[in-house]
Amino acid sequence: MNIKILGTGCSKCKVLYENTEKAIAELGLEATLVKEEDIVNILKYNTLTLPALVIDEKVVSSGHILSVTQVKDLLTKK
Image (cartoon, rainbow, N blue to C red; front, side):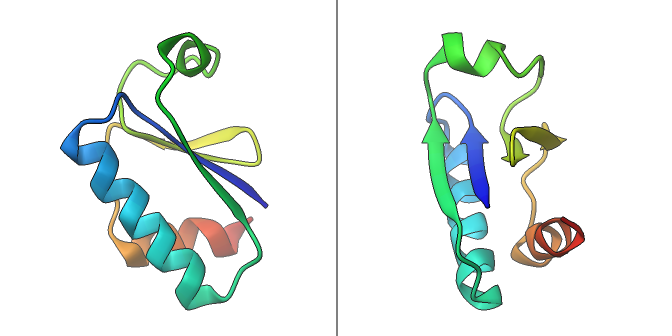
């Protein structure tokens, strides 16, 4: 599973990254987690609000700071 956090390095982006990291660990998933801060790459995902959570190249959340539980829910729906 490939997971990306899209954001420009703001505090909200960092919290989403940390919560996603915790969710992956708690679920025991084998996943690659990447923080994408390059605006050119972020624009390719057609999302207007950040931070955004991308799972296997699909934007599943944007503009929200998800809790660990919310991220776990999205990861297990995959």
